[in-house]
Every structure is written in C-alpha cells, then in structure tokens.
Length: 114
Image (cartoon, rainbow, N blue to C red; front, top):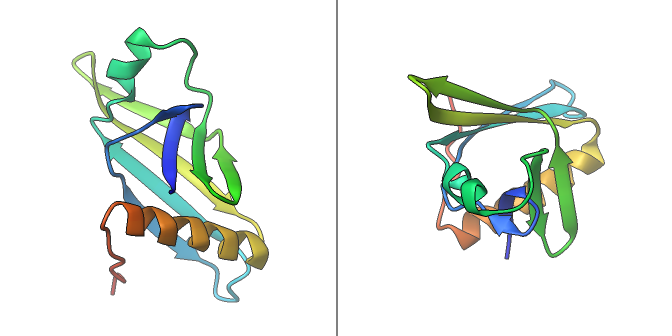
C-alpha cells in the first residue's frame, strides 16, 4: 500500500493533482502536488501534531518534502500545494515506483501533457 500523509500516521484521503517536470537529460525533476480542500485540516483539529511536511509512504520507506504551502480564501483552506524535488536518476526511479503504487492503490492513471 502507498499513502500520503501530512502528519505521520494519518493518511490524507483527498487525491492530489500531480504535475511532473523532468530535466532534458532525465537526471532531475520536480513533482508538484495540489490537494484541493484536503481533509487533514479537519483531522488536525482532533489530532496531536502539526503539519511539518508531506510524507510519501510505501513498503520501501518514506519520501519527505518540507515544501508545503497552504492557500486560504475568506479564512478557509482552499488547497495545499507541495513540491518534491528529485535530485538524481535514482531518486526519480524511487519516486516513480511510489507513484505507481499510489496510482494502483487509488485507481489513478497517468496522462502525459502535450
């Protein structure tokens, strides 16, 4: 199973939009996750702990980013956007393995932008 967490141990159930970019030589890249109206805010009110990052958790371990930004409108959370930086081909391969597991677990598909 693969899941995304903002507070360790609490799975986010809102499925994000994910945009990937990759350098021409394939050695680096960026993944931007956008969670529209994530349920972590409801959970956080009842849970212990603060949002310190986004955790991509699967059977191989955990990928972590601390680049997490929230957008509010009229005092209400609109979305959370997270950026995961991929620094080398091994990290790219690891990230893609996570995404494949996450997609399979959530019945998602990959669409290549033109």
